Length: 183
Image 1: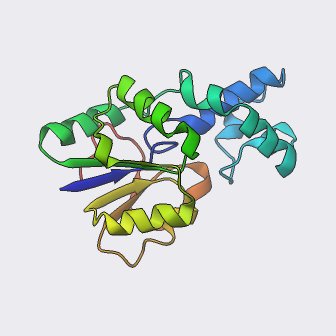
Image 2: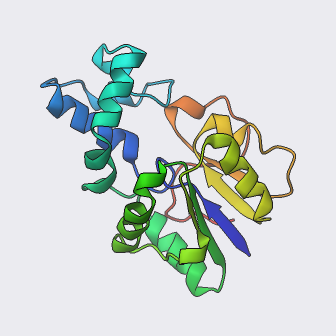
């Protein structure tokens, strides 16, 4: 079977990792419980930043956010390695900016995920991501982002949402934990 996975906030806990970085950079101590209540993908509001300032901060910290010690969601690596060892095809489909594609692929490999060069898609806008998902004819696809998931209701692929505070309104099967997940 063919399995597709988003990376950020699906396989790795990127936004919470960034939240801790923001706290440190802004010399604040906003509690993680505030983070866990956010209803948007963006995290800047928790720090009193408007959209413009939040976007500038995010962009100025991309290298640190993407390539430091961001934790994997428990069980994610093990599940993907199990699927790979069973002969399934694993595809990564991430909207990270093009200039970070090669480094992202290497980072994911270094964390122990099974990565095939030909099955790693990166550097596209959400609409392009949706087209890639459609063209790959996946059996299963996993993502966290409402803007992507909302557009996939008319395809044969079985779509799952990685449970996050900002995607509670999406009414498709949820993955709360990777450990013990079965398709």
